[in-house]
Length: 635
Image (cartoon, helix red, strand yellow):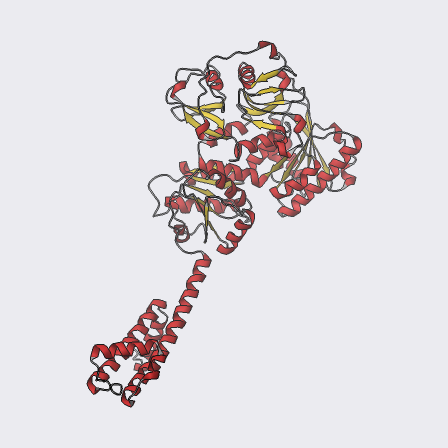
């Protein structure tokens, strides 16, 4: 049996009043307006029917009484000149009520404005943007990503970058403003919220975004967070019909398959650990290669573009290689969507094929119109046969990418090669025993020791190693502590090198690009800035997802890769040549030359460490014996 409890009238009125007071600023203003109106009308009615007026004045009507009451409600000072006690008493009643109402209104407005400013500061308001680049998440990679996108957006109209992360909006804006003082024509908009919450995602309008970048945040299992974010986007009930352009970062290969299944064709995954491992493995054997990769991946300088050129229809790929003055052709995008880097030189173009070109900008990929090529055969060198060498590699330090680097190195090394690992990291011997059963071309030796201690480095036969790889301790230390250990080890190596008058080929992995300037005094051959490299790749793919196939080909041990080969294998040292002749010589070997390195500038940062990518083909140059050509080749 239900019993209905009857509450007293005063309790029910108080309850209704409490509900009205908690309804918000607009409701409070509405109630104050209603009370003011009642007060003014009551005073106007009394003045109309009693005939009260100021001394010497005629009685007022309802409209005039309403106006005078309103003025005294808003301005208490108005009643100072009132005369006639009846009129004064009525106006006193109106003025006292007005003081109460106006003071309450001021308090309500002040509180409302303060509350609204707090909401704006929290970053929960909707972003009315379209065609923007949306970044979901926050990590150390976000600053280099924003820096690259700002450069890419220079020739765009009103570009926008929108960021959603679980951080304070003002803190995000302050960090960006401190690290990137000049955003040029790009506007950056920050919002606070969870990237896996559907309501928070709606704030940043992902359905109208041109591209979406999902960052792996600094969590225990960042890949799971990335996969959840992909799910929140692709399975959103309010999602758009057209496919999204999503670029996401995955760190663990075990999660890649799940992420691909969830994202389908809408998501391009960047496997960060795999990317860094491949670059380190390739770079340690070729000094200067990291600079080439950085040049191709950043937006400042030469970049990779796709361009349709009907004028090449019916011509061979070799014809295309020589057909551009200011661009370097490196591959083909066929009409059916297939992409091939360094195809056979006799490959025939069709009208719907596109060239893949390295150029300063998309509008510089233009045919030169030149058809009359004159080559001085006497400058061509007949050297250049590949002779496999047994190589010794030293790895100092350890992180989760070490095993991948060793596996990747095995694709390039000749049988009989060896690798020595020095680290004090725990349980490394167990991981090494597993990798021993996989590699075929190298033996592995493990030495337990602290790489920052001179007593550990001194006994090592450093001069006997062809390559030295210095890995950061990113798994067990924060960024600055890890980079500090790397820097100390580099200083020791430099001191040993100068004392023994021996040059070491050193590739050093670091996390924070700001520490690179400090480490450059050690004159290491290459610095792999892990966060920077992944940031560059994410930025490039957010602008053009077709680049994924190009980079996959270049970074894979199968197919064509980038090599720095002795220029003397192509052109006789001391001979003046132009790059048409250099390109012709490389093309005869089914290779594409994309630049060169003047090794006399190897440690000169102002001259890009001697690396020149995509030179003008008509420029004259004289190569020395030590100089290198940067080529795309099978081996």
